[in-house]
Image 1 (cartoon, rainbow, N blue to C red):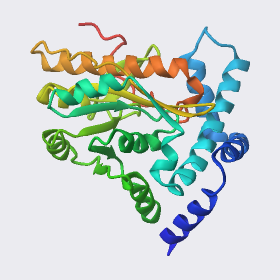
Image 2 (image 1 turned 45 degrees about the vertical axis):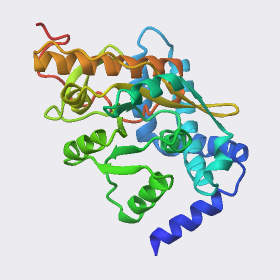
Image 3 (image 1 turned 30 degrees about the vertical axis):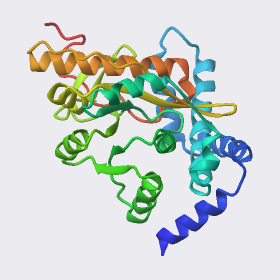
Length: 295
């Protein structure tokens, strides 16, 4: 019953035109910034440390406010997307770097999509529908089952498959063997057992090593993909393939390739700082050794 109530509410909210929804999302985000003091503080703390010496407190607070406005827009955009068929949505999306993703698929080894909680990452499935390439998404299931069921419905409505994060390695290999694109969000903190430390905004960030492991094992090309909100809608940017570093030293190769992934994500965040998920404690796991680590 709760699931059906969530769907009904979302479809009703989704009837609001996209531009009006963006305005309402901005208002909601402004309210959330004042209501959610905990996450507002996390965003300001993260931004202050990331842009130390580059931006003053007033600029930092302005970005933090826009971050919450972005999150407010995400909510309305999910509802809007759920309430319209894909053909009506396509006119609001453009693609840059199409040749990058086409070249990667042509290699015949599947594609590893490097992405992040950026812009409205939930609408990347619309891009998958536009490209008509088979795709899978690695995700962490939500604890609240009605919302989990809703998000699976939303993410798979255009044919994408979902791969739960727990014990995902084998299923990802199967997807790559079927020459699918597998999207992984690589911008969240992980426990030290799950990741390696790599620089992110000048600080050691414990980053999931799964993508580097997969790239080294399969040779599947890694293509960065980000969905950026703009005044007319959304632009999906597919960046050039990230070259695989493979020296034979497994530990160093994991660290070097993961560092490359973080550099790409950081470069995009620096271009559009208000569209990234600064409310997450990205640097929560700390290294046991001085940074940068001596070889």
